Length: 283
Length: 80
Image 1 (cartoon, rainbow over the protein chains, first blue to last red):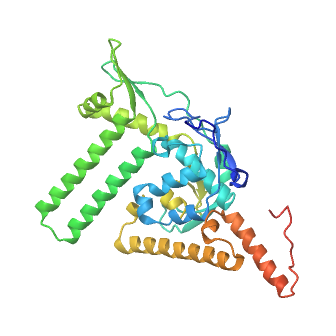
Image 2 (tube, each protein chain N blue to C red):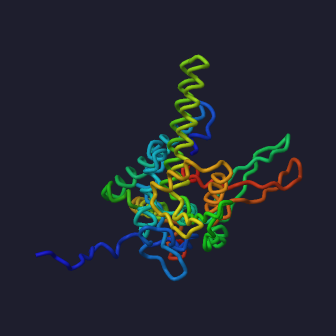
Image 3 (cartoon, chains in turn yellow, brown):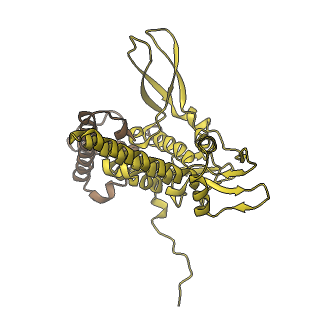
C-alpha cells in the first residue's frame, strides 16, 4: 500500500534560518514551477552560504560549467525548484541577497576612471540599499515588427546565460590554442570562422528560446519552439537585432548595477557598473 | 565569466591559484574547528560564516577558561 502521509523531518527545527527575504524582480512570473515560499509581496527567503557552498564557489570548473551557481541557489534559495530555468534577472537579486546575509551589509568594489592619471578607487556599496531598490518587471509589451508580426517575449533564463558563457569560453580557448600552435593564417581564419558560427548559433538559440509566442497579422499564434527557431534563423538583421535588444533589456531590470564614483584625479564623477557575475562576485 | 575577462595566461593562473588557496584555507578552518570542538567534520561544513565566527569565539573562550583565564567579553545576545 502506498504511504500517502507526508514525512516530517524531525531535524527541521534545526535547519538554517532565513537571513532575509528578497523581492524577485519577476514576482514569480516566467517560472515553470512557481517558487514555493513566494509571499504576497513577491519575496522569497534567502539563506546564508554554508562552508560547503563557499567551497563550491572556489572550484573553477564548477564556476565555468554553471554547477556552482545552481548548487548555491538550491542551497540558499530553496524556494526555487529549478534554478537553471529561472529568469536571469532574478539571479542577480538573489546573489546580492546571499552576499548580504553571509558577509554583511557592505561590499568593497574597486573601480578606475577613464582619465589619464586615474588610480584605482575603492568604494563601499551598501547592499541593503541595492536590495531595497530592486525594480520589478512589469508586463513585457510585445514587439511589433514592420510586417505586422507581434512577438511575445520572456526574460533570458540562467540556463541561456550559462550556455552562452560556456560556448564563449570554449571559443576563446580554441582561439588561444590556435595562437599557441603557430597555425598559418588560413587555418587561423578557419578557427575564427568556426568560433563565430558557434557563437551565432548559440545566440540564435537563446533569442528563439526567449520567444513565447509569435502572433501573425491574420491572428494565428505560433508557440512551437522548433518552428520559432526556424523563423528566427531566417529573420532580417534589423528584426533580429530588435528582438535581441528587447530580450536583453528585460535583464536590465531588478538590481541597479550602475553607481556614481568621484575621481580624485580629474575631479569628475563617472559611472561604474557592479559586476554581478558569480565568479567575481563571491571571489 | 571572470576567466574570459582575464587577458593573459598568467592572469588566469593567478586567479586559479587564488581559488585553490582559498579552498585550502577554508578546509583548514573547518578541520581546525572539528579538532578543537570534537564535532563531526561533515556537520561543520553546514555552518555559515557567522556561525563559524561565533563557534570559534566560544571555543577560544572555553580553552582560555580551561587554562584559568577568564574571557574578557562574554557572548551576549546583542553580539549574536
